[in-house]
Amino acid sequence: MNESENQLSFTRAATSTSGRASANSCYQSHHPNPKAGFCSTSGGTTYRHLGAPTAAALLLVIFLIVLTSSVSGATTYSSHYGVCGAWAGEPFDSLVDSLGVTWIRTGFDWDVMETADDYYDPYAVWLQDNMFSAMTSRGINVFHNFNYTPAWARSGGDQRTPPSNPAKYTEYITWAVNRWKNQCHHWGFWNEVNIAPFWTGDYNWYIQNLLIPGIDAVKAADPTAKTVVGELSTAGDDVGKLRTMLRAIVAAGRKDKVDIISHHSYDGGDTWQGRVADIDTLHNMLVAEGFGDRELWITESGIDDPDRTRQATFVVGMAAAMDTRPWWTKFFYWQFHEGVGDNFGLVAYPDWSPKPAYTQYQSLIADHADSANILSNTIPATMVAGRQYSVSVTVKNEGTVDWLESQGYKLGAVNDSDPFAGTRHYLNTGETVTTDATRTFWFQMTAPRTPGTYTTDWRMVHEGVRWFGHSLVKQIVVNPPVVSLGFLGPAPALTISGAAGDSYVIQSSPDLGNTNAWVTLTNLTLTQPVQLWVDTNADASLPANLHRFYRFLPGQ
Image (cartoon, rainbow, N blue to C red; front, side):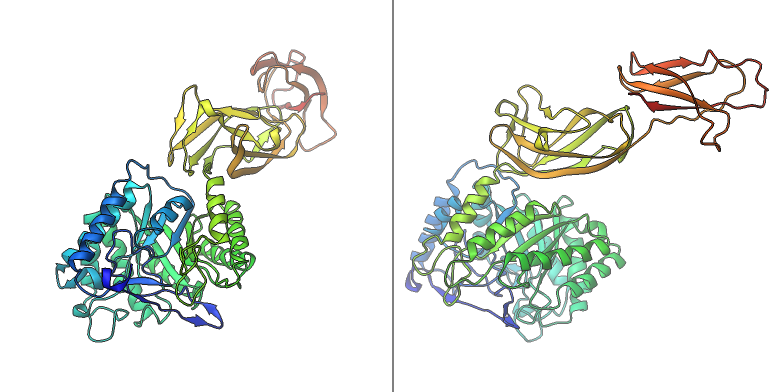
């Protein structure tokens, strides 16, 4: 499509600091296509609408809306992978579908939507309505940012300038969430507010007057919505300013309203190892500030690769690193297609041919169709030798396919071996665990008879296909079955628990302070899990103030 057909022009904004990309983000996003606007809070090559649509352009837009909306019935699910970019119509629609991503980062900006106080441009609203409908019908989740001040709401400056009345920003958020809360559930608050290309106001003013009231506005309009906080770039002071943001949120009493932390990762050089090291540093700060239990989303990361030789390795490395970090739950590649003068994209410019990184990303997304996150477990950190425990492991289906009992989905012991339990735990006959659903597996663990430290390691398995998802690895200390009881008088009755067939050595001592005073009384093999044992050799003539103590050691 050219400008005469749809009144579009290409614009690009990019910045760099000390030789690294600043997320190459842009602060424009008026897209005349229901599918455009993906990651429109971020840059590269994007489409910008220059005026009201011509009749020809309007017909073209309607055709694209009908085309994309006619894709029926796709289930919306939560996988780990997304993309940033901006496109309109074919061939991008087919390329996105073939890639298999299930998350898009977008933003239909405040300055585009509300063109006068309390007046929402009908054309812009229409486009956004259809964009959300198209994404929902195709099973694509949207993470949506609120960005950029309209001319009527600011005193001079441009879109990056703070609004004169910050209440107008929260009014816009309230309106937008109420309109699209059935189609969008994840909302962010401004793009890269820590660097000048996207915010020219005071950082602390932003936190107190836009961010915190914005969080309140989202939760008031939709209590089930998820707030995504951060969106800072490594091109500026990212860790320090994110720390400042989180402390201000805590001080304001809003910590419980923050659901997800997001970040744009471009530090660490153009290698996945360097980026991951930087992400680990960020997460250590989150833990120190009390936000370690929040999901971390990397909502922008990519490399400028003119030779098209390093992006594929970068994508694989980032995905592998995320697999071993349960707290890192989303990765959005920046960006979908190349632009004029940059080589970040998965799709080449100007012929829109898939690059090697596109094929690699497509492959790893398919490989992660089976994906799981272990949310919780009740496996104790210490056990008593020979004792039996009822435990549970709760797992969430974070993949793109349902788990069917008939297809061999199970909770398995890694390496098909576990010192405490059987190696497979099954779904019920005919059971299905749908995407985004959780499933709790209950089973019995029996501590080994020999005291020591043991490792239990569990993961989901698609039998005969693959092991997948995060692992539950836990160190368990198994203690001797020592029971110390004092008594007065003869014939004490003692309860011993374990498993049928367990063997114990029963010893007694009159003095717990004397390690040499223990005397073996008998060997006992349990015939049932709980058994009563009576010391028939207790001397009835013992002085009334004398205590006898007992302990049970694992037998041979």
